[in-house]
Image (tube, rainbow, N blue to C red; front, side):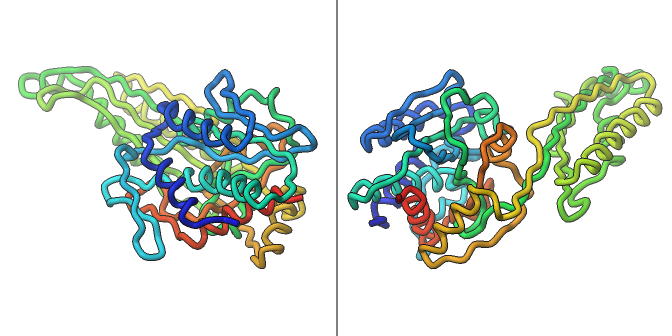
Length: 358
């Protein structure tokens, strides 16, 4: 039986372990200890992802990530009525520790109830929040599963991600010319001004139903009395349409070239990085059908929803592992307003247990 108090205690314990991207060693050791106490054979792959398995007879892969975004240090989770929240100065870290805790509780309950279960593998990754880096570098020679259930979706566990976009990042380095701002500013070429002109020529926000564009970082200069010599722009765009990705890539290139012509004494360098590719689910894929059947057994109705974000599911699908990404009962991820609906969290653990039943 899924136990509410135990599940919340596990989640709180995990949340209290700081694990910003790149600093996951402590939580990896704690989760490894908990899984091994349940009889799961665990190892850490060459990149630092936590892998585990209960057997090798046609297993399914259970996945979540262990890192969190900032501000995510010194988190103090608490129950507030029907919800779990933080103290408003940090994220909660339920993305994706609610998924990890639910998997642990699902396995624990199955063992406790003495029910026969199917074999499973575990992939708890690191550095998901900075571009699915852990999943991209995971040692797939150690994974035999043909299907994966990724506990990292938004909203209730009944929500199955039907589509996720291609994610393209870009970085623009602007080089101007420094000069004393009070003595001879006319000899300078302001990199910040050039960067601002470029940003004004680029789209912002939602482009269409499945396409977004954002400038997230603008850095430049170091003191007020010098014309800034350098500036850095970091941005991204996402779309479920390949042609739109190509169009936006060309748009950024054209605007960089146009700005360069306007400021010939500067140098503007543009670089793109593809984080992950889009995918879509029809609802008839084996992994999705598996989730739908588990939900039905529990009296829950599924809903297919598209997502503006990515998950390790994008990488697994690109590697030929049929995957379903499901909600983990958390909302307002990546903000200090993040929260978990306790009843929905319990359902996540129940679905995990049901997925593992024979």
